[in-house]
Each structure stands twice: as structure tokens, then as C-alpha cells.
Image (cartoon, rainbow, N blue to C red; front, side):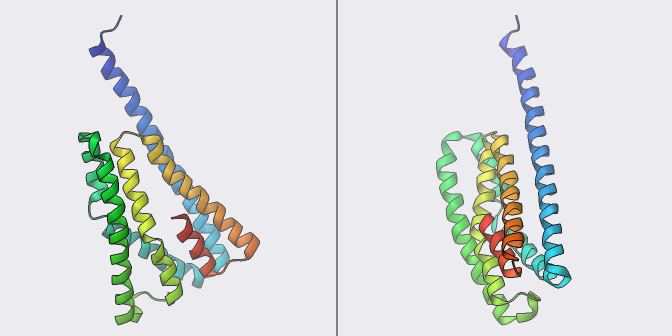
Length: 193
């Protein structure tokens, strides 16, 4: 019979292998689904539409990184250190997602107004659709950090995979059923954030 001290390291090693497998597998699936979505959008919108879509999509990625304020990196450590902090961390993260998202939206709109050429090709409506997804994108990132801190790697990976799957399905429906324009594609992307 194994003592509890010798069983614990073996259990942790198995758990770690599983967590790594789930995380890497989820990221691979996320990238594959994202690539397929990008190809579908590019083929449907053509070079000009795809270029404007790329500006919109990359703007969101940049603003999400700016809006994270390091919280997505600090959260797993704080949650793992003291599970009693999960509630306040989630509350603060959601408030930061909302407040930070709104602040970044306002700053981006002000920037576009004062320097109209800064986001080439994006109309005001396309920009507003793009920016509307920002608080949701920040909230998702913060919630993933909570799951990571709790060691809930299946939930952590499921968020990416589910989001990429829903986005792909939404883009397919928008293109096939509605012959979506750039605005339609941006609406799907914003809704799935």
C-alpha cells in the first residue's frame, strides 16, 4: 500500500499531464477553428473586405490587451493563493471589464474623431460594432483567468473552443443564409465575443 505522501506526487503528475493536454488541445482546436473562420471570411469578403475586417479584428485584440491591465496575469495567482477571494475577484474583474471597456471605447472613438485616418477603411458603424464587443471580450478573458487559478483547465479551454465554434457557425450561417456584408460579419464576431 502506498503512503499518502508517495501517492500525492504521482497524482499531481497525472493531473498536470491532463491539464497540459487539455490546454494545448484546446488551443490547437481554437487556432484551427479560427483559421477556418478567417479563410471563410476572406473568401467571402474578398481582399478589400478582408483588409478592413483585419483592421477591425486586430483593433479588438490590441484593445483587449490594453484593457486587461495585467489582471489576467495576476488573477490565477490570487485565486490559487486564497479561494475565498474568488467572489471579490470576479466582481472586480467584471467591473474592470465594463469600466475599462467603456473607457477604451471612448478613447478609441475620440482618437478616430481627431485623427480619422488612424483606422483605415473602418466606417463609424463598423468601428462601433467592433468596439461594442470589447467589454465582453475583457470579461471572458478575466473569467478564464479565474478558471486557471482554480485549476479548472477543462472550463478554461472550453471557453476558447466554444467561442471559436460558435463564431464559425455564426459566420457560416451569416454567409450562406444571408450573404452577409462586412457589417454582418462584424456583427457575428461582436455577438460571439
